[in-house]
Length: 394
Length: 157
Image: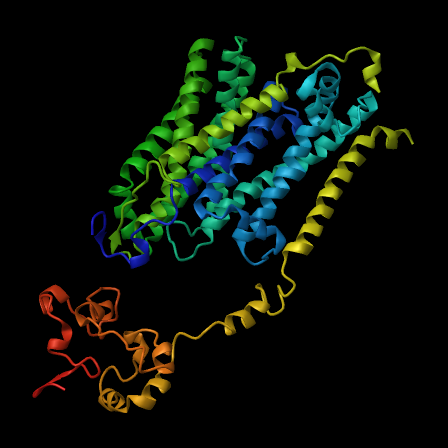
């Protein structure tokens, strides 16, 4: 059979989980990572990353809104996903994930953004006209109280929500890793390290995404990039990446030393079918290269312009590397036979429901949503609207 | 008192959430079938609905009431425990009205290899052949009698 080497069980020949299932952990990872970066400023009072606080929150929301779409397209019948909420199945990790998602979206992200933007929303509801005014008025929920005390309450409640939000962000992405890690029939996935690796890789990709978006949007707005801010973010990216890489290497070394019955098959796969995406793209290009680039900015004295270029290059390579990691987990886990006697090939469609074009659209869609969110709720500190007269205070 | 006034928007938000939850509960009341969870994580009434569906398979007991000769052939062979409708397909219609509904003649060149085409996933002791090498497209019943497939010294039984 074309594309099949050795022996495959009949249900292994064609891959069931497509590029959209690769995209799903990639998108949720960006959400969790962006939120954790935002939380740093809020909970740990890291002043330097303040310019990216709101942008990180909006980025997390934009990606979280798109995150379920790959799953909906993969499964078909999107109306059925509502059944997860109607008849909760407490012993199914996948079914309960709907609640984790809803909790994170509604109880954490939307709430935190609303509390943080409430002052701006109230002011904008009084200074804008037409449809935008109606949107802002709806968002105020009919309360225009932005007194100092009311804003202080918002700040305190927001702080508590961020505090709850950090473990929630870990839960959101740890859970995605858990779903893979708990599949005992698949030795490529089945490791308790999987949720931890997923969380750290999520942080890496989210931090890199916010750093790139901040630099890109600041450049598009013809403003000056706050170097103290990007230096701090790059530093976080560097340290988180080191932990992520260490964990992945720990997993690899453990597998090599343990050499269980699946090892020869998986080792062969990594050296053949997964060589480009795993060794070259994920490890060399997408992990070691950005780590070395970021390390150079930590130890060498480099000019601002050069640092910006290094950060942009390292950020892009990081995104490629983390996407490759998701690819290697999801696709790699389906390329070998569970009999360890053969290998199949992933044939990605182009213009199909689960094809390349859909994947590209779903990757770009969060950026379009983010553009809308940035227009509606400007995240830039200097764009914070002024209160029009004293009457707006109550 | 002032604290309550300044937290008024939070109460409004809590109201929106509460309204959302209430709306969900009302929708849930209408959408979840009444018999859901009666026996397990499924609709209890589905059992009765499935039981009421028309039967397609007659069952080998029904076949044997008329085809005792075939039963006689099968009983000592390797296919003794293979039920009639495994190969012949669902024939409840034929059992109901044998005169007007007659089963189609089976093409053994296609049918037998469904089970007996060689595949490494099958148990070693299971009879399996690479059909292209074994019979070169010839129908299996040229040599084997499907109701008792072993070839004896005297030819097909």
